[in-house]
Length: 446
Image 1: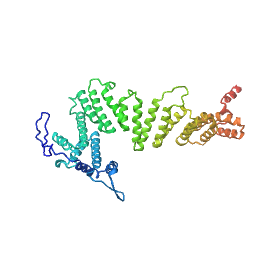
Image 2: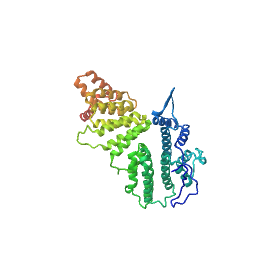
Image 3: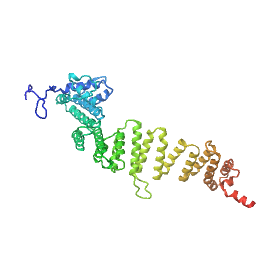
Image 4: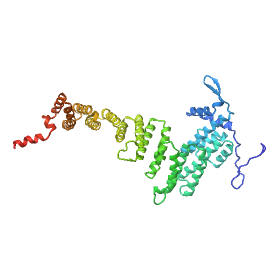
């Protein structure tokens, strides 16, 4: 075909369109347009990193950390076009269609649309036709336009433009259009698209006289796709909330949270994702015997609670430590449990709560009973938070466990110290230890 062959745009009936289509754009010119736009934006470093990664073998080192590449290098063009396409697709899927279409028209380098800051409120068929012809040699931006077009149908429906006439068949057609282009999208873009389509199915079923979530299979299938692809903690939670208890595929949930963990960028995301993973492993746990102490799910749950603890804020730490201690005890990790409970007692608890936790450790870890009982005695005696009547009860419990150890060791000095402390809160230490004595004396008087 000769270069002067004329191209003509026709409608579905073969009739020529009156609007004169724009000429095809060169990849080099559009790539430069994208580069010059994003290099002035906050994401400039991200663009440069992508260019360097894509053109590493073609870069010319000029020294002093400076590199050079020609705009006619196909790898440079590919990097810029891919970056521009990705940005437009993400913008569209984030439901900012005016900005997405404005970028498409701006990058098309047409004289009519050269204000990149002006977001369009309406897209005409003529504009779309111009883009199809303009990007004929740029499949990266045709893909971006296709995503925008699908998202436009979704947005029109959700905004009420098509809601009254939309049927499940038409909703499925929108989904099919999106699925035709999913092989060319990254996983998070696929997840975002399926998330948006799931809302259509949800709204359609909600319009029926009786809404039954467990019958909304079309929405569920979309949400399963979201879980399969996403690394976004918020999207995962949304899906699980929609499923309720109906999703039995626990491995899909675990895989989603593992991806979210690897993609997490903030300490808050790391905290929440580790916490969610720990809870997932606990839900998976099924005891296989009376003394099931070596269970992988419990091990993983404990690990992720520990990881969550390292990213947790101060108010969240006590609850996490209590979860960890409970898991350690269930696995008969007495030494680790002792360390965790000691941390809880000495750093997060005070007064009576601290003393009772020390008593609990002494009862569970027999090898360390003596130092923990003595610490509990000291804490109870010195504490200003505990009232005298409550101290009397607490000291009685401590003495009940501590005195037999002293007697076995024949440590008369320690027994005397114990009696002296008890005497401060009760006139008769023996009566404190044996409440029956005060009733025996009264009986003799009678």
